[in-house]
Image (cartoon, rainbow over all chains, first blue to last red):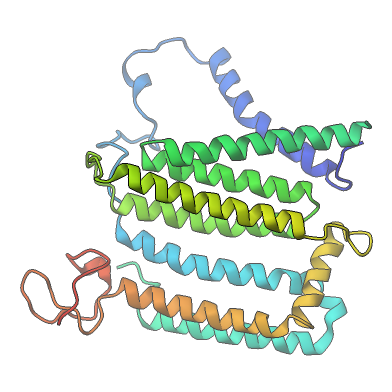
Length: 120
Length: 199
């Protein structure tokens, strides 16, 4: 018996997921041609010729999106227990959650208005 | 010792080793990008420890927020300023190390005190799995309602603060030309995130 009841499926998932990269690499080793020269040594970049190094300075736009993502990620974490306990909580909790979402909609509207969601 | 407790012990030892070695790597590695990726591994291992304590919701939140969002934010922040500068020797290194050691020892003393003084016995059988998450939801919408709603205001403030900081604000002037800068996002600017303010 596993130490945590109800996590047998999770353990199985974890083992299969850990086996996927191992199997992929082993299969590659067994099946692929043995040549190690030329283009085999290039970094795979979606079939394109890789340009430059990987250690480049990222565009600051990514940082803006990551900031906004953190906020809404935390919001998701707060709403998840509400979704799980939805049937027991009733109407009052529904209204409270609506207030919570409404306040964060203000944040979304602000971010939208200020152009933080736009790429250009 | 039954097989269940043995499995739990092995899981605990492996996860603890990953946390300790990973944390040491975060501090000691000279390449800051490796440190950031190792930090993600440490966060994931801590989530595994939460899972081992039957706190599945906390483990999920740990993965979602720390690995999924905060660690990505840290990586972006590092790659934004990815200047390969040589690390210079810092003056007063011994003093700095002594001060750091003092602060860390104080934190350790605080943690030890908390561990010793906390009553660890539970009032009843612990809630497991989905029941635990549902109970968190019940508490969140009854006796912890005010902190829950205040959290939304806090998130609103964090969002507005982040956007205001990342944009050039009205008082900011262009460092090069000295003119008042426009309200465009910082990404259009030549200047870094934290720029000089006009006097």
